[in-house]
Image (tube, rainbow, N blue to C red):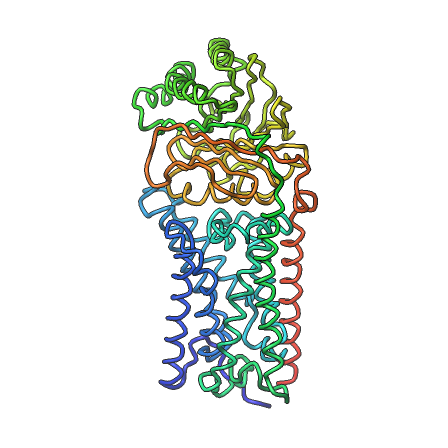
Length: 554
């Protein structure tokens, strides 16, 4: 019976192998850091195009065993997400509450899955056994499928999604109108692994290490073990990858160039930002803590009204208020309703007002408690004082205890300017809510939010992609920072700071595009689903190869 080498990831029987393992660890950490720098707040998006290359080299050149080859990408991903989530949920942020450690626990769990399954890029052994035929396909499909899974399972998908690094790459993000954000991530990953393939192909002196009998180590380069020269087998995939990246940007420029002239249908809009939270206004906070919703409404409106009148004086026809500006239903509270009606009638604006209904059983604080009767809603009020409908938040945040009872009807509102709609808070992180509204004719979506500072660094960028995916203008209004106005191609026309609080009114003229939406609007996340299914199929193929190999050893 053939001898089987130890399968431990730390099987480094010689100083040379130990050195290779340490170098691999260093390269994996470097990839994690490069990825982190490509995201906000550093926002060096160009680094995303090379950030995976060090971990590719670590996995396919310096790994001594298949276990080490699986460890390296898991470590790179854990470094990226660990840093991001430590910034977002710093130790002590929720001092004494275990939920502060849940995000980090999630990183460890997901990182463990990456290691155990050999995802998203496949194991070294798999690529050796298949002659590196899937070297570009497995990682691109795998990483996109992995992001799709994170999105659907809500595995921290607000943070660390690769496409976010490209929010300033205007030509590339136009591809979201065809295949969603998944196509954007696909192109970036493809470029990384094409560069990685070139490096591990043309550095054979580094990759020539004895192959473990377990079949797991890198052992040979991509061109070996096939009985043929490596040239055509490497050059063709590299040429294809280069062509895809160039064509993607060329197509993006073409989509930008084909945009219709929309100057005649511009609408002046405003996002009102009061510059503080409840805790920043002691008199309002005391009312909130006593659950004096009527008194709180009067106090908040004293801040919102002057800013709204300022926006109207600058010509805004639509004004958007932040999420949960009120903690009562204005249609059920006559004094508040009368005040809102008077405001719109005197200014002649359409007003998006948002309110939160917390039952008596609900907690005050970040943990609201899963209690019946909770509502997080937005309504559009016309210049004649009519409440045109109610939209309820589509995607509650489970770990805060949100559980809303509003029926999800996705209302849209016909106005003389065009068709308007609203979303709230977390809804923009999901791809489906805005898409459903645009399918119903929405040309502009008002997004009301109440974000904390680390979150607001990322949250408006998801609006950039929702706009580009569906060719819809978006107006985001927040309490303190991160308000933004975005055109249908993902251009940020106006934005408030994300690093400091500011009291301000954002004003911009936005186009109201054709209500037909895009190919993506009509077809949805087909590309992400296709990549996820491809990832599952390739993982299954990998495991079937392993079973066949083990039988041969017995």
